[in-house]
Image (cartoon, rainbow, N blue to C red):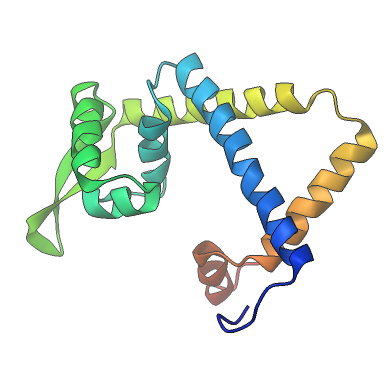
Length: 159
C-alpha cells in the first residue's frame, strides 16, 4: 500500500481487528513462558529471536522491540541461566553476538510447545467450520503481508 493512499474505513477496521489479535498472542506467550519457567515474555522473545542463529544484542533489541538497556539486562540473565552465550563477531572484532546454548535451544523448544498447547486450549471451543475459516484467514494474511523470510525463500527457489 502506498504511503500517500488513505485507507478505507473497512481497511482500518480490519487492521484494528488484526492488531487486537496481538494481545491474545502476547497473553498465550506469557502463559507459555511461565509454564516452562522462561520467566517472562521478553525473555521468551529473545530466545525465539535467536532461533535462526546468533546476532548482535542491538539487532535482538530491535527485533523484539525492547530498549537496548533492557536487552542487556535480559541477555545477562539468560547468560547466567545458561540459555545464551556471548561470542565474538567474525565480521567485527569489537562486536559481540548472542547465541543460544544447547540448553537455550531445548528451553525454546519447550516454550514453543507450551505456546502451541496454550493456544490450542484457547481455540478448543471453536467448531470445525470456525477453525477452517481462521486457517483460511491466516493463509490470506500470510499472502497479503510479505515477510523478509518469504523474500529469502523465493530467491532461494523454495516456495
